[in-house]
Amino acid sequence: MRRGALLLGLVALVAFPASAEAGKRHHHKHKAKPAGVKGVVFNSTCPGACAEPPPPPTPYTGPVTITVARVSDGAVVASQAISDGNFRIRVKGGTYNVSSVPPNPPSCQPTPETVCPAQSGANPMIIAPCMTGETKQVQVRRHHFTYVELHVQNVCIV
Image 1 (cartoon, one colour):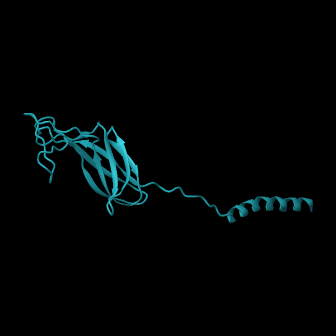
Image 2 (image 1 turned 135 degrees about the horizontal axis):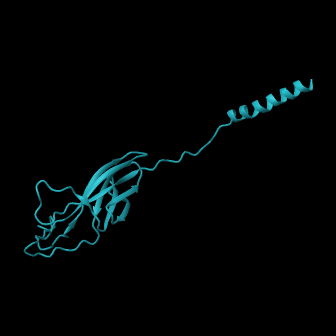
Image 3 (image 1 turned 90 degrees about the horizontal axis):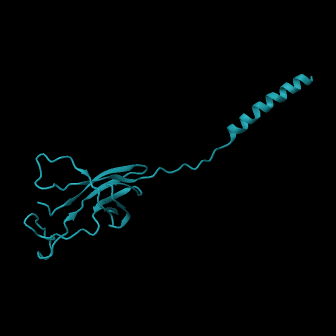
């Protein structure tokens, strides 16, 4: 009898933890996957006369700021200063304008080798900066990073 009771007890001990575990609900906080924009800024400046076809662009290695602004109201929701051409910025899902903005771009000084652009819609005597960036509109989906290629260019080099 003792042997039967012992065997029954062992069976109950083995079965009980398994059934107790099966009945438990595991509440894990699922870590939200981030979303945003990532990409590279290329230097589109031709050193001298541009070749046809142009060589593949190289990553821009100077200082540039990447800004992310909502399309709906123009509010800047994120920005990041970079110097190696690569960026990764977390933002929520939505539609954004992503821009490459060279910081404090030098003003153009006209010479025989350079042509200075006038600022559009402004006084033609006001000289525009040499370094210009680019803006692209992108759609960021939840839990995904949207890849963006942006360019900066020295428009004063002819």
